[in-house]
Picture 1 (cartoon, helix red, strand yellow):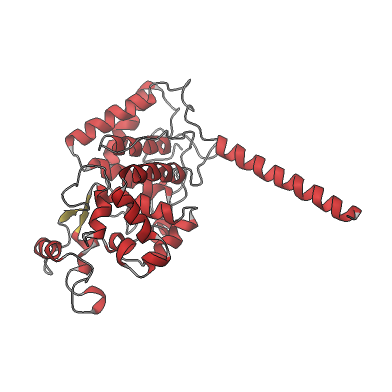
Picture 2 (picture 1 turned 180 degrees about the vertical axis):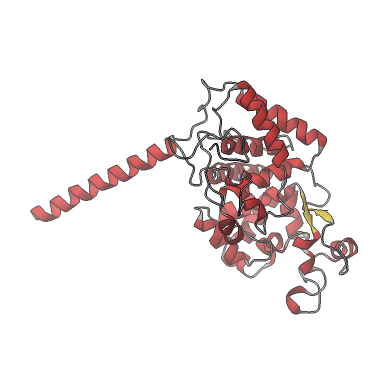
Length: 332
């Protein structure tokens, strides 16, 4: 080996060591015990408030989970979705008159501020509330990594373009997940979050009468479910009525959602294509649906892993961003 090749090899090795060291540092910035000294009762406070909210309205569990998802996909997990500003993410098409639970986050933040003022970010509160929503709905738990700081700007354009839509093809949805570092397994496991909650007719009525200009309903939709949904969402309706994502198991966090897909009972087009589309075979989503439908433990384990992974999308840490006093507003 020549001297130049040895020098290159040493430099390359040094660069690789530095790269992995930086990766470890970045990962270590979020940790489960981040508030152990500064706000030791944080988890108890958030759990109490989420439990109260779900007791009042069971649907709130799904709403809080969805807020965390919609926040992390835009600007990373920085609570930018919660900002009431010009060009807010709340006013983006995927969130307008759809995203809900902001008042619950306000109450949680107020309780946390009373216990430890100026310490806990809204982004971390949202991440904990999402976990607690799943647990209190009968789902699995996971250790939430903490230490995020709150963003200073919203990104309405990012919300309009970056969030997966119920009307998109599977390839597009997978691409949007990949853009934020999530893979096909994450697509399917996180879609399983639709085991709880409701959706408006406007998000699935395109499947009921004239699907893709065919003049007929979506052929992958179960016939009895189709009849029920056509009655709920007539052509003359305003699209505001709601239906459960997971028929017969709307409030329980389980793997019934995947069993529904096998039986043609996925509510959104973006649900059913995980099993019924041509791309479902080539992308491996169909095999994952089959696995999760028969193995609840596998689904819950993969879902928890994907939630941790999603919660680590581009967090602000260190001196970046701020700790908002009010989740709806930047501090200055």
